[in-house]
Image (cartoon, rainbow, N blue to C red):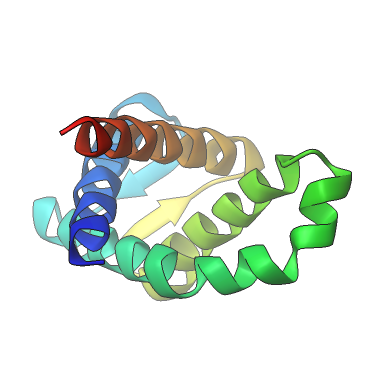
Length: 118
């Protein structure tokens, strides 16, 4: 469980860094310290809250062939950026939220695949 938390945190921090660089509409003030705090928050939410959300939304995920899982990821990223880190991070619009979530998800996918291969 600790290994999964560390992977989630590191991939979230790197994903936020890449998203800030590539996605227009994502603004992070405060530098690396804020990214580390946001990565920690994303890692904790993904580890503890996301499994409950996935269980609750299982019928919708089945009906939509898993696409609703990405909407859950978008909800989690929005929760961390706009609700928890609202003073230091800003995301403007649904398109920016989509791309930010996609970058973080891809980063997490790569890190998880590397961790499983070892």
